[in-house]
Amino acid sequence: MLTFSELARDKLAEFAANSEEENLALKISITGRSGNGFQYDLQLIPPKEQEDSDHVFEVDDWTVIISESSVPYMEGVTLEFKETLMGGGFHFENPNPLWIDDIAQRVQVVIDEKVNPAIASHGGKISLVDVCDGVVVVSFGGGCQGCSAVDVTLKHGVEKMICETIPEITSISDVTDHAAGTNPFY
Image (cartoon, rainbow, N blue to C red; front, side, top):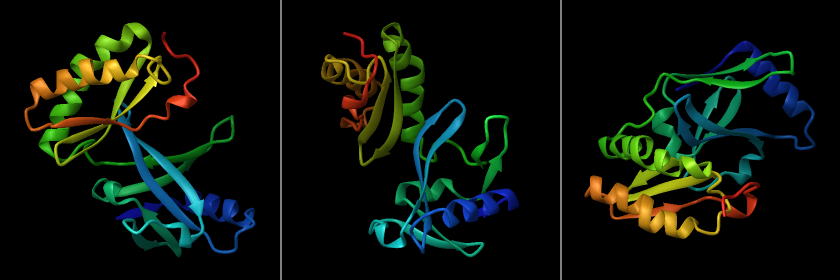
C-alpha cells in the first residue's frame, strides 16, 4: 500500500523523538485535489485518537492510520521528504487518478470548466472534497472563504450548475471553515 523513502522514515523518527508523546502513529488524510494532485493532511498522533472508520496499517515499524475515504487512493504511494533551502517537507508520490468513480470525475469537470471560472472574478475557487451517495462535498477558498454571500453562491450557482449537468447529484454540502477566511469578497 504505502512505502516510505529512507529520508522520510528518518524525519518521522526525528519528529517523533522531539514529541512529548511516547507512542505516536502517522495519520494521513486526503483533504482535497487540484491540478497539481492530491492535498494531504499528515499528522503524528497518539494511536488512541484514531476514528472508528480509520484504517490501520503497519509500515516500516510505524502504525499508519489512513482515513477511510483516502484508502482507495493510497495504493502504490511513496512518502518522501524533500530537502530545500528553506528546510524541506514531506511529499507524496501518488500514481493514482484524482477520482476513481465516474460521477466524481464528472463533478470535477463541471467545477473546473464552469464553477471556478464563474467565481474567479471574485478571487474565489472551489475544491471538490468528496462525492458520496449523490451528495457533493466542496470547500471554498480564496475570496469565497468567509464571504457573506457564500450561501447564495452555493445554492443558486454551484448547486445549480452541478445538478443541471449531473442528474445523479441530489445536493451540495460545504465543509469550509468560513471563520478562517482572510480576504473575503463582499
